[in-house]
Amino acid sequence: MNRVVLATLPTPLENGGKLPGGSNLWVKRDDLTGLGVGGNKARKLEFLCADALGAGAKSLVTVGAAQSNHCRMTAAAGARLGLPTHLVLSGDEPRQLTGNQLLSAMFGATLHHTGLKDTDWSGLEKFRQQLTDQLSRGGSEPYSIPIGGSTAIGAVGYALAFDEINEQCATKGFSPESIVFTTSSGGTHAGLIAGLVRARAENPNKDWPRIIGIAVAKGAAMSVERISELTSQTLRLLDCTATVETTDVIIETEYMGAQYAVPTKEASEAATWAARRGAWALDPVYSAKGFSGLLGLDAKNCFSADSNTVFIHTGGLPSLFVAH
Ligand SMILES: Cc1ncc(COP(=O)(O)O)c(C=O)c1O
Image (cartoon, rainbow, N blue to C red; front, side, top):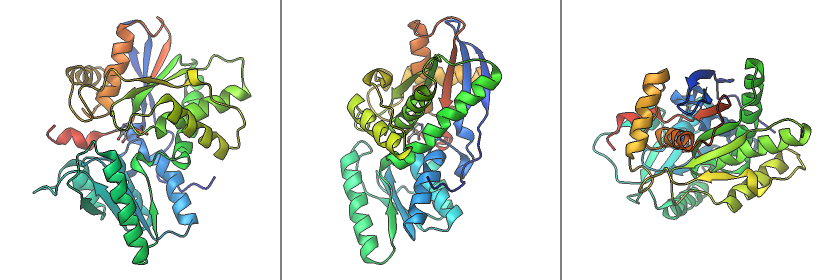
């Protein structure tokens, strides 16, 4: 598959000491992928942007919540590749740009404030389609990326991340029992499972980790069926004939709180725990809720004592500086 280099890889895998339940914590620093201050979307954008360039696109369009990290990182990719970038965002135009919007504007993107609610995913997607049509008619030749970059092409980035994690763990002398991360539009999750399925087919006798997604958005939280379908599409792109089992797809939904981007007490406590343990900065919308899921599962004895648990820090730093 075609790929453009946008991320600084491999990202570090840091030792986080013992979890309260006795498992060893490892933090995979995908907040340090480097593109436009970092985060998980850099891995997807390497494949999405290669597809865009291959298709002869002259601009990028994507969509997300007002403080979307994916939109900010697409703006960064557009800047790096010289492609004018349009972002369809929820909410109204603020008096002053902050966080991800501030960075997106610095990277030169055009921000389209739709006035829609940040949970109106279908309304936002409809707006993206309309803008894409309009830009196509005007000759801008856009490459249009769905919410979160969660297509099979984008997910390939996380299939390769699975291999990267696996190799780093092997170098450090262990096999992880679980890999835990925040899931929203599902591309990170499907990609990781595709990586697992492919590696398992090549080496069926090894103990492979559980891939556990902590969901943070009701509207975008993918069902087991949809993640399985996206995983199957990703495996096809990888020319892998092995198939995903429904038991491979684990989505924990009890850590998102009232709704997307509504802070929870558990996430705030998890952010403090992580900040004081390893100086990891987790944001309240994504990574802190994900880590609250990891601590919650640990409290339920889901991780065996002395096992190894990898938390993928997927980024989100800019929204730490925005009022929630
Ligand atoms: C910081 C952060 N973590 C996790 C995710 C979830 O990734 P995915 O959309 O691939 O499920 C996102 C998505 O926007 C994100 O910005």
